[in-house]
Image (cartoon, rainbow, N blue to C red; front, side):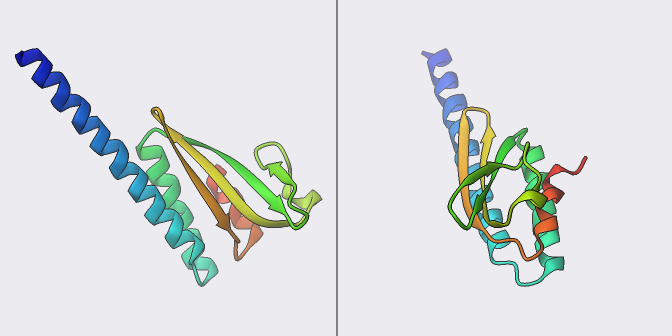
Length: 116
């Protein structure tokens, strides 16, 4: 019985951590989409990138064109087409968060997510 209780507590704790991570990602994404200057945008990209690293996450970034085509920005260069907005799918452990509709103030800031 004691082992069962310990396993339940561990599972519940991990569930709370995953939920908390998702809420933090939502908050950081929301702040990024509401950035009102390029400097604020850069800072918020850095904060979001650092948090993704902290939770051992990774992401898939898609650029959505004005004609609603989806481009994988890991393989497509931004110079070849005009991007209307950015969507990310952030993965960590068995979780994912679909971040949508970021319209960068400066399109070059998109690639700050790929900094080493």
